[in-house]
Image (cartoon, rainbow, N blue to C red; front, side, top):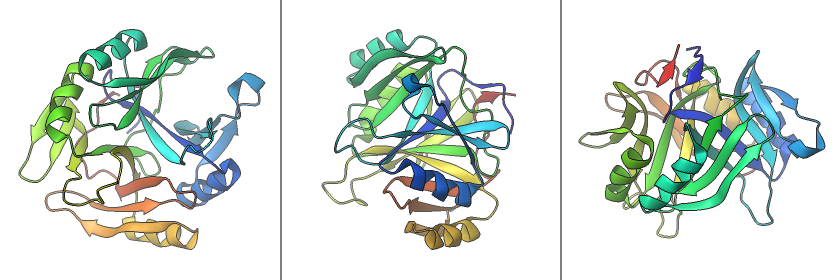
Length: 260
C-alpha cells in the first residue's frame, strides 16, 4: 500500500546498522530487489537509502561504535522527539541516544523500553519515512520479543498511544482500528541470555521462495516457513552479517497504520 506518510505512533522506518555495508547492500539487493542511494556528503557518514523502485523502504549505515552488532532498528513516528524522550523516561524506559538533528531530514532519539528492547523515535521534517507498507519488498509488520510483557503493555500505550489487543497466544499493537505489530514472550522460547529486541517483518510474494533464495545468498534460516493459525505464512532469517528479520506473505496481516 502506498502511503503519504506513516501515522504518528506507527512504524515509520527501519534501519540496518551493519559491519559490512557493501556485503549487506549486495545481499538485500538480491533478496528484495532493493536499489541503493548513498548520501555522499561527509556529514551523512555513508548513510544509504534502500529503495524499491522510486520508493524509500529502509536505511543502511556502517556501525558507529566498536563492538556494536549488526542489527535492524525500528523507528516510530512522533510529533516531538524531545517530548517523546521525556515520555520514555517517565514511563520507565531509558534514552540511549539523546534527541539530535539529522541534517534537514528530522530529529531522532534512540530509546529502550523497561525490558531493554531498543527502538528509535523519529520527528519528521524533510523526510517522513517509508512510503510503502505491506507491498512485496517493503515493511509489513514489527514484532517485540521481550520477557517483560506486562511492562511493555503499559509502556508503549503511554509513550506512543498504541492500542493493545491481547489474544490467546499473541498480543498485537495498533492505532485506531489498525494493527501494525505484535509481541512475543521470550520466557519459554529463547535462551536465558538472549536480549530483547524489535524485529521487522518484510512483505514478500512467496515466503518459501524468499527463504530458499536467502539461504543461497548466505542467510541462516532461524524459523522455516510456517503457517500461523489465523495468521500469515512467515519465516525468520539471520542475514549473513547477523541481523535478524522476518518475512511474511504480502497482504495477509492487519491493515497497517498510515495515511493513504
